[in-house]
Each structure stands twice: as C-alpha cells, then as structure tokens.
Image (cartoon, rainbow, N blue to C red; front, side, top):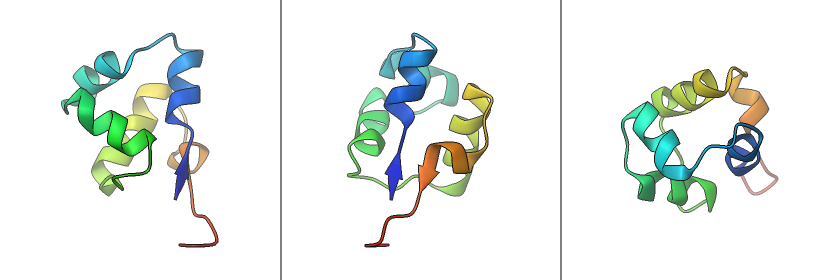
Length: 66
C-alpha cells in the first residue's frame, strides 16, 4: 500500500510529531506508516484522513503487490 501522508503534512505545514499528537500515536508510528513499514488500522487511517479533511482513499491506495 502506498500513502501520501507526507504530502498532506507538507500541505498543512505539519510535522510528524504534530500529526501524531492529534491522533494519539507516537511520532515513530507516523514515520513507520509514511515509510510503508507499518500498515495502519482502519481506525487510524480514518483518523488521519479526518485530520486532513479528506477521504481515506485520497491518502491510501493499494499497489499491485497488495
């Protein structure tokens, strides 16, 4: 799965730490999701989308490997 969290963070001038604080996870969790080392739960994906005011599909997309 690919994601555009880093792009959305840049649009909103937000650090990994700030995003993590808003959704109550560690900064390391955000980093792991951004670098595709961790696939977020549905709840976490929904929280991320809510912070940015977009749909989950606007941030997360399946790849051919999925």
